[in-house]
Length: 566
Ligand code: ATP
Ligand code: MG
Image (cartoon, rainbow, N blue to C red; front, side):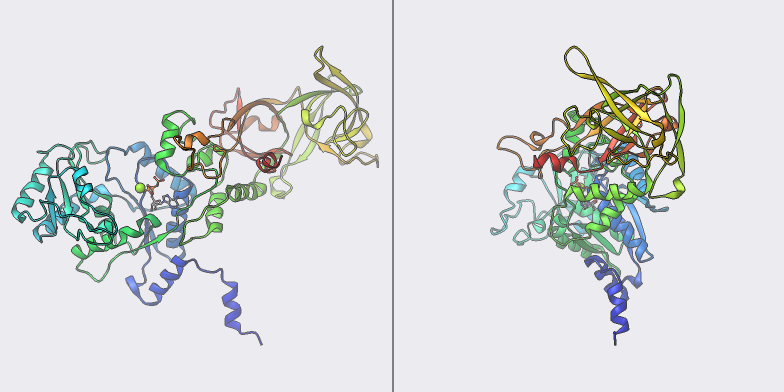
């Protein structure tokens, strides 16, 4: 007999390691069973697909365990931060489908409280003002195997520290002249604990606090405290913060007098092949004009993917599928592309578009006659209905769908061969017209009225079906064909003396003039379609009533893999 509960177990999707931790905490009654996470971006750039993973994880855990997830801007470095980023980050999270409710916070909301805690540490002899330069301090840090040297200012009196810290705040000193440091342990094997900086002087305008402050807390001194203030239960961050965890806990030890305390857990950041993922590098691409802004469809930013035609569902599904790992790994970008194909296959209407046109004249079709043919919008979704396609004497087909000296196995159009025009008729090529240089300019074909799609009486069969548009009805469009931005699997690794930019693909964008069915006449930005036999495309925000502009989201088949195999 099958054990019932065992069967139930196997039906449940397995838990990732963070879910396991949370379920254990809940079962032990920790945090009174509450689950409260946060997503803490620094507003110093647009969000990328790595952030999307963190968003899906943090907001997803809150949803799964009936908890809450805050959005908190970690805005402790005014020099690099900007409201443009604050706005774009909120838009991107909403677009991904998540909601922080009324819990939008800023680390800068806590500057007063953080300052008071710093004073408390000074009063307890656990923090001191160091007059040395950053270089001097760094020279004293030691190495993981060699203890650091204590600063000559380490043992100054509490009164002097209080006075100096107050004067740092009052703006008496230049940037970098002094720092406030935690007095932890210069011999700790964990370098993070060797008297880390808590506050630095920066005479800079802050996007929210203006000129109120000229000293700013370091990330480590702000983050755990912000978690504590917001009563976060699970502070989830990426692996590089693992070595910071003892410091996270040390700072909390100094201020906490409650049973509640947030717990930091680290997971592996998302890396993707052929992609750079650091905001610093993405900023370089934007500033040097290698791409057209943060939302360039080649960028791995959320806004770039959105403009490229990705759906929120495809990104969420991708995040789900890759899971949550404890150790660093690299995900094949083909998986992300697969996720968007899978979603668009269900959602995108099919239309015909010709991107490399070759004119076809159907010589036995009456001049000035047109007819309306019926086409199915999406074979995967009956509710998408059908549409009308105009057919006439002059058509465009794809240049690659014709071959003059075609091998036997070529089942598309060739001299004296027949092919099916999708939703229309069989046509046969009789004449190939060329210009004086021998380039093919048009094909003269005849159609067989008995082969009309759906109603024709002919029982003849052909192997190939090609797409087409009626020249008189087609809309002209700029079609932007994107390829990968980088040529190498790990663009961060560059040749000696060069940087990641040397790995950029010079052909990551080509623009072609294409012709699409008139059905697209009212298309608006972000509308998604499948161009039959070609790929998934979406309408770009540059598109106007006069000139349609499409972005290729992904080809139907992986043209890149084909290219690489050649
Ligand atoms: P970058 O290194 O790209 O500049 P960051 O970590 O400095 O990113 P933050 O704004 O500080 O960017 O990150 C906000 C949150 O997103 C953090 O919790 C961070 O751990 C997480 N995050 C950043 N990059 C990734 C990634 N590649 N995969 C998963 N999570 C990430
Ligand atoms: Mg950061």
